[in-house]
Length: 249
Length: 220
Image (cartoon, rainbow over all chains, first blue to last red):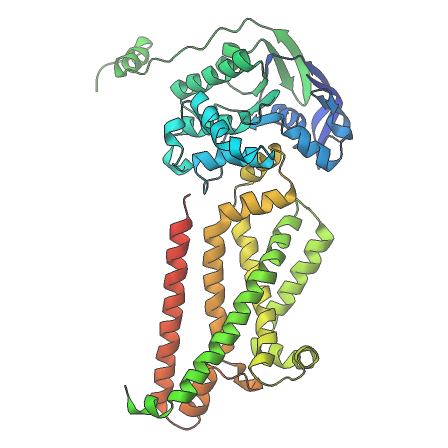
């Protein structure tokens, strides 16, 4: 599904990615983890050519993106969804219009747009918030709008750049649930970049560990499943008092 | 109504008309040319969509040069050009030429600044959905920057009103010119003060409308 072949990327003096080769098969939930600056986000952004490589080939959905014209690349990107750490919704568009924008870009038939938007928002559980603006939503809701937007054109691949890194643990679990569902129900290949080990362990089948712009190792894992965090005040007290708690103030 | 205003009523209306014409042409030039120029300034910056150092430097330098002229000097300097375009360098129509040029330079800078406030991530999201440069500009940048664009235009319009007051030097007319010729030079201070009051009302009105519209369309 995704093939990176000897891909390199340099930012002025900094060699962010050093001749990386990676194959991600169809239907996989693939994690990329590593320290900050290891090149994991850059590697992800090379998969839809948001960063164009200095050398090497990028192939997605059987298309060599690195060989495409600008127009063909734009076409190809419509079947590669992407979500971001900071959601990147258009703040001046309603939830509905944010999702509709991606259909409009893909020239989705006008009469069917509305029902498709509603369908996508239903999938992420936000059909009741259609007329609201992003500023009126919580972080988790914003990310779900971004997921609906990315899904609207039935992508084969969903690229997730630190999708839960600005969310609290409970919301993180919610978002991971949605992502796991997308993979199961629609067979969408998912690539998740995260610095949170728990996130990667919970839903990935295979994980690439990056260090200094290179792949350190890629291993197969058994996803642990998504654990809902305990949010009761009693739980917090228990956890705080467990090791070295002194007394109530 | 004060007697002096009644006495000069026809001239005052004519002056207001000339001011509205000059400011109107400036606004038109700002929107039709200043907006695209400001957008290209933004897009040609380093790391932006069209990243073009040469185009950026040229447009940037041009805008800076126009903006460095004391406006009165720009008007005088442009006389040969104005004559070429309009056929004469005197009158309200001729006055519109330097006004339009400063309007483009002024507003394009404010457009560039408003667009710089759009989070880079929004542009990236647009690109990841297969948006062309055209789509990015009209469906994302302008939508996200719209209240800044309106506030910038409001600031610009108020500057245009101010610039238009000195167009008397080329016979452009307008309220400012009337205030100087009839109020100041003929020692009718009262008349001058009334003209200043008209200008104040005009500016307040523009600012009020601009601020209200900008607030209404800002959902961020």
